[in-house]
Amino acid sequence: VFTISLAIVGLTVVTVSLGLMALGTDPSLAVVLAGIATATAPAATTDVIRQSGIKNDFTRTVEGVVAVDDAWGLLAFSLCVSFATSVTGATEMSSLPVVREIGGAILLGVMIGLPGAFLTGHIGGGEPLEVEALALVFLTAGLALWAEVSFLIAGMTAGAVIVNMAAHHDRAFHEIEHIQWPFMVLFFLLAGALLHMDALRAVGLIGLAYMALRVVARIAGGWVGARIGDAPVQERSLYGIALLPQAGVAVGMALIAASALPDYADQIIALTIGTTIAFELVGPVLTLWAVRRSETV
Image (cartoon, rainbow, N blue to C red; front, side, top):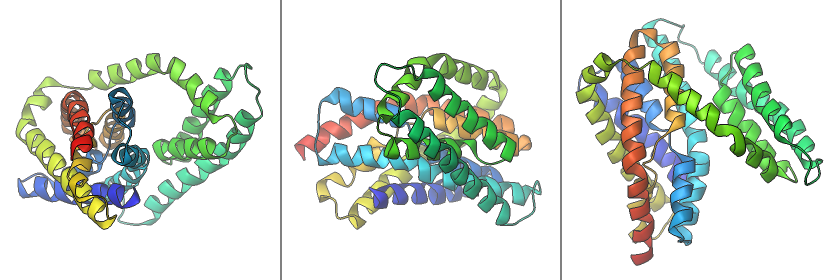
């Protein structure tokens, strides 16, 4: 699981950034887009696997990879944004801001996750948990913004701590799932409001190159990681295909990148939203094909 996820993230960053730069894209923009390209869609991937009704070593590995893939992706994205802002002169070239942002976010997530795990683990079945779950989400996001650390990494860390340490963690996450859709709709509505059609048309060629490079990188990364991890030969080429869907995490990354690099904001938003729609439409179909293929090879 770790070798596949690390190989996919690493090759995605290298392939997309170098490929876009070779096509004449500004290095700062290319590196940021490469960081965004690492994002996946855990919910879409697991839904496809569940609806397929297929359970085997391949699907279990894919579920494990997609669970940690975005964690590596967020770390890579933070490094990419830090590099891009230093190149453009928005910040000084130093490793300290990156260490502070990532390390601070992880520390904050642990500090909130530990009491959160205790709280959710000591609330009995049938007792209300919706307010407590929402409070943890907003508290994590608010403190992360106040401390100027990554709220995405902080939230993911807090969730990981709770899911591994709480006695009744399923109930907390189910409560969030019950009320997430209004927030999701608002999130995508606001993201779409930032999309300018002129910018979308302008990034047409770059967008196609970005999509092609991401597909190649993820298939190659999945194969390399599976080979290192000694996965069955016939399954190695399927991992990258199964992990092509992309959704909300990529859009969230794009909003952060647009804020950090205002000169490229329109291009980042337009390209990310356009390609995310494409990957979200085609990706699950390819995931289902890979899952079914794993049963026949």
